[in-house]
Image 1: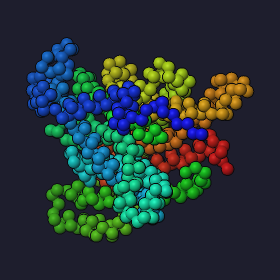
Image 2 (image 1 turned 90 degrees about the vertical axis):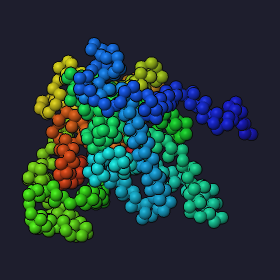
Image 3 (image 1 turned 180 degrees about the vertical axis):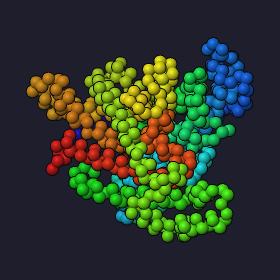
Image 4 (image 1 turned 180 degrees about the horizontal axis):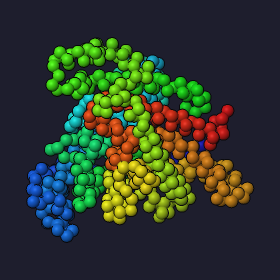
Length: 294
Length: 305
């Protein structure tokens, strides 16, 4: 006789998600960090104490307020042109998250379409897509991004395109593998047998069943993409002044390392915190939705 | 991927390199007419057209493509306009510096990850284990160029212990290698911990313990040897990432390797150098994959058949 244990009550889906999150302290921390940074990015205009672009050469390279020579008006000090670092870091959050989310949305879409195509079509289409993926995996992503940046140019939109064009491979591979698994399921065969059309089949029967690992991979990718954005901007191929990006602030601050350590240190902390939040959130999502991915 | 002969594996280079060549061609073609960069500004329109015709830039794309493939196959990769000499030697002479740096990064990662990963697995759920996993996540979240700059700040500027740029003796390698290795060390630590835990729960480990094999030997011979297989896969995948990370790290430390060369070539649109560098780095990455395959067979006798 089969015994069914009822010791864990069947909670409604939303409550299960919440209780799973609350039982995972790292997940809560991740969500909190991401929420705070998202709030900062959205409310940057109101939160920034000063104009992030206003120069004041008489106040250049001021240390943070708590250090000797600091100025209470500039809590985190100023950069080499006397611009307020705190305000710049606050506006930098906006760039980081905008690029991060836009590039992930675009690369996930490319990955989803190509993964579905490879998995569903099989044969030559699959072989072709897989060979392209092999080739892309053999070129270091950073190198590939630089070469694509050569064509796309610099600035916010080209940067999103560069990152998306080079970061879709992970999503495509996961989607393809999942489709190959789901495609053979009985319910898909049954749907086919009663005459479901390919598009309907994908939308109603395949997509819902591959969604969780796709969401996990996409979330994890946000961290990777934010790091990529900062590296490209650091090298001078990403965000251009007067737009503000943490990577670009770091690159400027690097020249004043010997005298003013805070200019290069603080934007790095901002990047690390943001990516940390995304990683913790992604880890929890993975444990919750799709524990086999690791 | 496993169990194939080295020759067949080598043959798999061909389609990958072909597609890479195609990608490079498309990108170079899309960057547009390089004549604007190559021809002196005071040249007359007739001179310019003559040069464009001589280089075949006025031809349709498929003619340009055939010419490009012909050149590659005959080993002619063109001239770097920035250096004014053949691009191939310029790229080749940078390989040793990059290999030194990536090997250094790999060694740093393994030196950190192996002991910490084993320690964390053996003291599972202890306070040190928790501390290690916290540091691990941080290691993944930090941009490696920032780690490099912070190392320069602490050890170069404040403590004045090591040189902070250029290449020379061993001391020049320390900071760049640590910079390049930390991110990978973080991932490798996590992997060694989890795969060792996995292996230590298996029957043959229990049998070894039951036979009275000393615990150290159980961990090292039975546990670690099996746990290393996934670690090796990751090392292979990540070695390609290390080559990419070298691009940024070399720029931070003015390390005269391929990465620095590529970044400068992209700044100046030195297409000949970019093209060969992409090929050379891809071949290096593929060679790493091949080597890992061979190592698998050494570690895992099941694959030798």
